[in-house]
Length: 204
Image (cartoon, rainbow, N blue to C red; front, side, top):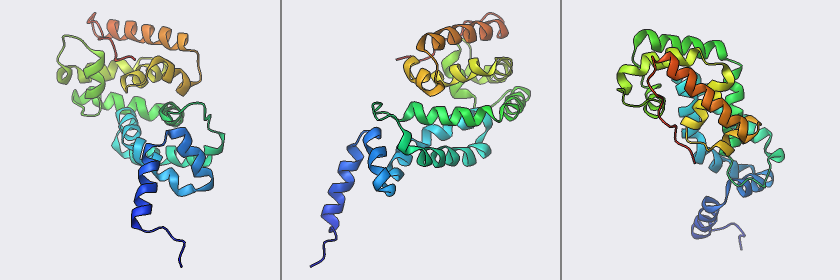
């Protein structure tokens, strides 16, 4: 008699894995590498969007895969006290982006020249107030190129939906530093945009 699980049993195992916290799933993947695919399914779309906003869709195709390859290789070092792996994955993505800072600046300058960018619009929607996001996307992209890299990282991670604490985890900095960087980034954007107040970026 075969010990292989039947379709019903496999379905129950899959359902249980779907409910596992990221940390538990990563721990299980050390002995069962195939489990890591579920972590990819959960977070790959958001990581892709984050990279695409900063480097464009072509780079996002390659780098989003690299993020999960690095995560898989380092999964035995993951801090299992943190049930949500999003900050860890965004941190890996941000480190990869930082190595291509010149590409990011070129991408943002191209957006500024065109004055239109679907990739930049989600950011514009969250960091501008009382100004049409479509019309402002070029200005915003130009302003982002003038932000120091750490400020840009912090602003765009918060704009991607991470809380201050999650951004701190992603960047390996204190939460207070996140708040001060974000305040300075907003101030610099406000000046670059001619005094229009950046909206309160979504925070937890």
